[in-house]
Amino acid sequence: MRNEEGKAAPLPVIGFRMDYRTTPKLDVIVANDFFFLNQGDYSGSMNDFRLLLEHRTFKHLGFGVGFDHFALDADASGDKWDGSVSTDWNGALIYLTLKY
Figure 1 (tube, rainbow, N blue to C red):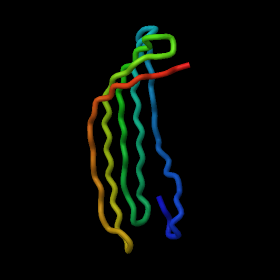
Figure 2: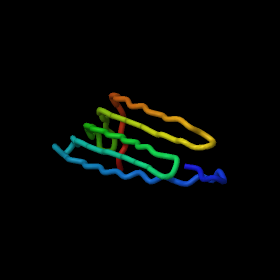
Figure 3: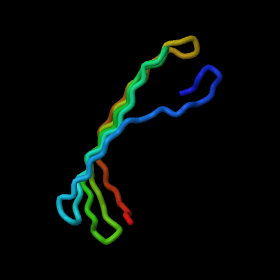
Figure 4: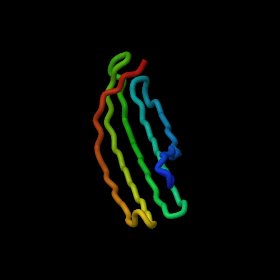
């Protein structure tokens, strides 16, 4: 977010994550990150939810599959910009993981 002088400030994201080891090599992971803002001319929210299944195939290398849902909704009304953005999507994930 930028203030009136154009300087940027970090916006905090609140999140949680739960890892559950079902077997010595298999983990189920649930994670959610969210953010909301309602300040002056700006308001909006962001939500990113993930459900993952990771398999530690080798000692430090494994693979994962999962589902991701992302949603973003933002509104601004002011002298410099007036508008809104809204999007959301779902997607499948396939990835490698490296753990030490």
